[in-house]
Amino acid sequence: MQVISAFAIGISAFCTLASSAQAKDAHVLVTPNDVQWGAAPKTLPAGAQAAVLFGDPSKEGLFALRLKVPAGYAIPPHTHPGNEVVTVISGTFNLGMGNTADRGLAKPLPAGSFFAMMPGTAHFAYADEEAVIQITTNGPWGIKYVNPADDPQKTQ
Image (cartoon, rainbow, N blue to C red; front, top):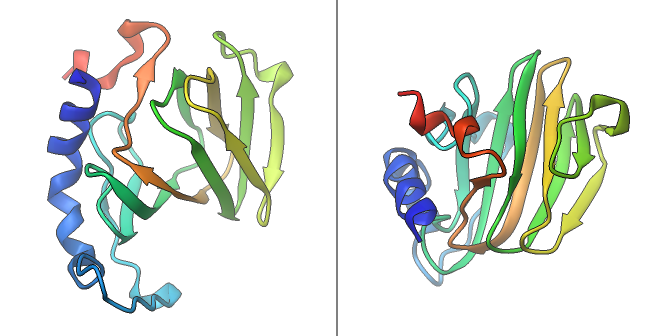
């Protein structure tokens, strides 16, 4: 629960960017030029940008969130409390499974790739080039690092 609460605080700053998507009966249409990037939640390593396209990841219900990561970005091994449903929009996003970030076991996922994982599945990710992914799933979304020392909030 602590992970979800911390995420809710971190994400609230950029949830307002998708205010038109908050209404239950709103029709949402977003073109690439409409995406409004802001700082990613502090639960993720520094350097990423995020944009909420639909819904609110800190609340129950469907949401769509884009995450833009720079070249050299890495997310240490972690899990999520809910399903993780991801599409690679641009660049190549490398995904590895397990409690250790063994890059030799990661699979490069180029633009157009898709992956989905069950809650609690340990995984890690990194990008050698700028990449954009889209997470479309049900909230509340959260992240729990396998090694608590990897949590960026512990170093801020």
